[in-house]
Amino acid sequence: AQSVTQLGSHVSVSEGALVLLRCNYSSSVPPYLFWYVQYPNQGLQLLLKYTSAATLVKGINGFEAEFKKSETSFHLTKPSAHMSDAAEYFCAVSLGGGNEKLTFGTGTRLTIIP
Amino acid sequence: DAGITQSPRHKVTETGTPVTLRCHQTENHRYMYWYRQDPGHGLRLIHYSYGVKDTDKGEVSDGYSVSRSKTEDFLLTLESATSSQTSVYFCAITPRQGANEQYFGPGTRLTVT
Image 1 (cartoon, rainbow over the protein chains, first blue to last red):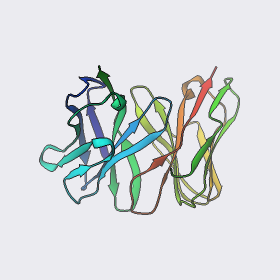
Image 2 (cartoon, helix red, strand yellow; image 1 turned 135 degrees about the vertical axis):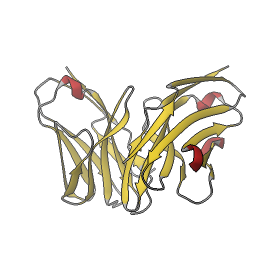
Image 3 (cartoon, chains in turn purple, cyan; image 1 turned 90 degrees about the horizontal axis):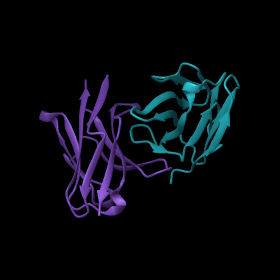
Image 4 (spheres, helix red, strand yellow; image 1 turned 45 degrees about the horizontal axis):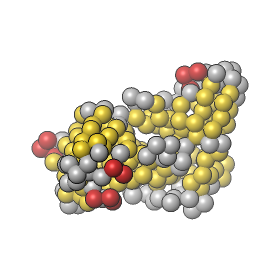
């Protein structure tokens, strides 16, 4: 079984400041991890994914995430927030190995303060 | 763009009526999924399909059924809608076996009054 915990349902940062969205996972096998972004009234868009290659994963829109096995974490970061980053972000985990089902966290709503 | 469309995009229905939501994809993907999204719960898997006539239950399948008679269409049916099924429903696909990531449709907002 697998699960994901996103710490902080709402995060606010100033424009230009560091964005840090936290995700911790639980998995019985080495996981596949994902971050998705959802803009208002839209579907989910894949930001980045970790599939056991490099532990630092770069995604779209300047986001990156680092897989830390010892901390069971996969936090999402961006050095400098932009107004267009305001959205809801979801972390998800998959067991892989032919089991493509995803388990999602409850989401973090990111607000950018001008 | 994974070539996924959902219909209808918005629907209001009354308690006790049947409702069918359609997910259509144009790229012959084998794996398809239905999720519901509710505040504070993220996305939860309702049903999924690994091919034509090959479907299985997810974590919140009670009150829902699915059918997949063609590769391109995955139908979600609420046999007798209840207010607790008011939600936003998303369809997703996995582009290939072993890829793990999923790509999502635009969603259907369903309100049961």
